Image 1: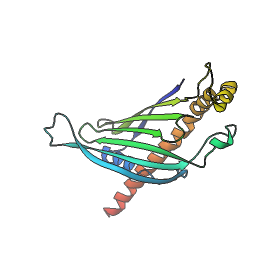
Image 2 (image 1 turned 30 degrees about the vertical axis):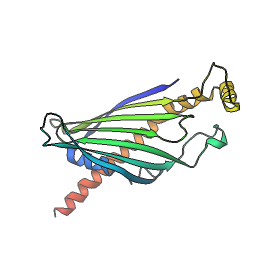
Image 3 (image 1 turned 135 degrees about the horizontal axis):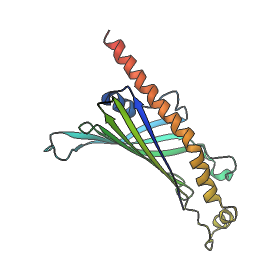
Image 4 (image 1 turned 60 degrees about the horizontal axis):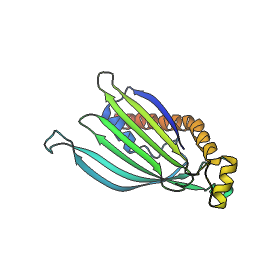
Length: 198
C-alpha cells in the first residue's frame, strides 16, 4: 500500500546563502508553533566529488519533536500528543543545492511518512526551486488473513487506506505553512543583516 504527494514551488528574490541559512535555522518561526524542540544529532563535512577534497558540503541530522496531528476518527490509543521526526539535510555550496529528507520514527507499523525535498538555486533568476515528494505508507495489511485483533479490526474498516488518503489530502495545507515559515525566516535574516550593516 502507499500513496504519493508531489509538488513544486519557487522562492524568489533570495540569495543561496540567505536561503541555506534560513533552511538550517528555520525553527522557530511563527508558522511552526507545533514544533516543540529541535536537537542536532550529528554534523559532518562531506567532500564534493570533482573538487580534489578541497570543497565540502555540510550534512547534518536533527531530531524534531512536534505535536501529533492524527484525525479524531483514529483509535484513541494512536492519537499521541507528540511525534518525532528524523531530518537529514545536505547543503552543497558549489552546486548551490540543498537536499532534505524527513521521516517519522514512531508508529511505523501504523503509518510511515517520508518527505524528500530538493532545493536548487538559479543565480540568473535569483530564486530557489523546490521539488517535493512525499510517500505515505501504511503497513496495515488488507485482503490477507489478519493475525492480530488490531489487524482484523483495521482490515474491516480499511483504516490503512483511510489514513493514507487523509494524509495526502491534508498535506498540501501543511506544506504551504512550511513554505511560509521558510519565507518568514529568509525575510527575518535579510532584515537582521540589514540592521547589522547600519
